[in-house]
Image 1 (cartoon, rainbow, N blue to C red):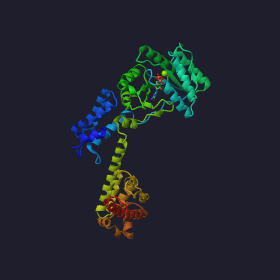
Image 2 (cartoon, protein in one colour):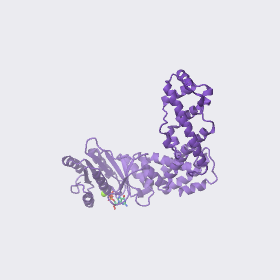
Image 3 (cartoon, rainbow, N blue to C red):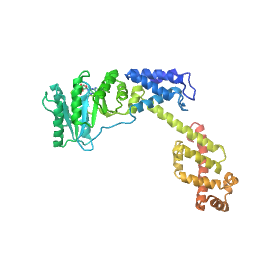
Image 4 (spheres, rainbow, N blue to C red):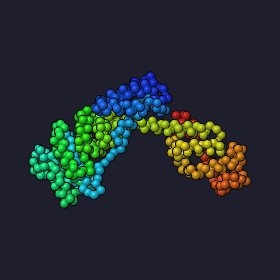
Length: 437
Ligand code: GDP
Ligand code: MG
């Protein structure tokens, strides 16, 4: 696997610090192969690798990762970003009907996916209408009618040799009359890109002004996906993509290519011939698939967890180091504020979270606490036990805070000190190998 190859490449490099140019170059050589094996277009691979390289060189290697894993992490993140980050759904009309037009080469899966979309929308409570605008083959109309029947969605069709533009127009009127709220137009394809067809699609698009013009593309065409996507997007303008036939062992490199050349999101993937074999597209899953590492997510999540955990442990150690007094208290509060909510950090340590629900420090409160602590004499700060009522009154006056607040601070401090003691026990426990006593 890619991971193994990278590990191999980095056997010598166990060091931490920043990623050097040669670390990155070496790792990216393997990534490049993986992408090409996944059928990503070579031009796309080239520009992608260049971008990753630029980002990776000089980056700090996370404490818990080795350089190889670090490069994978960056590659993975870039892949996810490149494919749009999150799932993008259909564009629905503000006022129905929503019009969806499918286009693509012959055999890509347009007719099948028209029916799949119809089924999905129907399950969501919509009332779709399928439109047979592929008039060149009588079999195509029949195919859509059969599929429409299977999913229980009406099909608008006229005979063959009627202009698809006119059919589309009349289908629109029919939908209004029948109160169908989504129109899905199945169009003709050709085996190769064809100017005449493109012109016809342009006319349908012009007439219907679809909310979503979706390019249906067969993931198995691999490298050719780029040419097809470029052409359809250039001549027709698409809003999104349905990537079909991902149920085989195709690695899905087409997803990356198509996204890169059109900049349009992949909205769905087809994962089988069955009519419910349609899934929303998820960039993170596709990135794992392209890299051929199902466990990449787990790896990265675990690394991140370890980083957070390590920070928390370090903080604990610091807290335990000195005699805990008001000066430490102030310093720790400031440090915690920089790191985010105290609870979030310490709850990473086993068994700690629950004790912290009462300690909550916000920005304003911290300023007040600071004022009170600064109104203590150094001796008081270092020996909190000597702060009697008289001293409390003086601290209240000095800081301009009510005496009740000074009481509360000292109580909080004592709580924290108690907690430190417990953490001390916890730390010993962790040193013994994490076993509960
Ligand atoms: P069109 O020419 O673009 O309308 O393509 P069709 O919808 O007629 O599909 C062509 C062939 O691909 C048919 O045999 C479909 O059953 C098959 N097909 C479509 N989508 C998928 C898919 O996601 N997975 C698999 N395995 N086959 C599919
Ligand atoms: Mg068809």
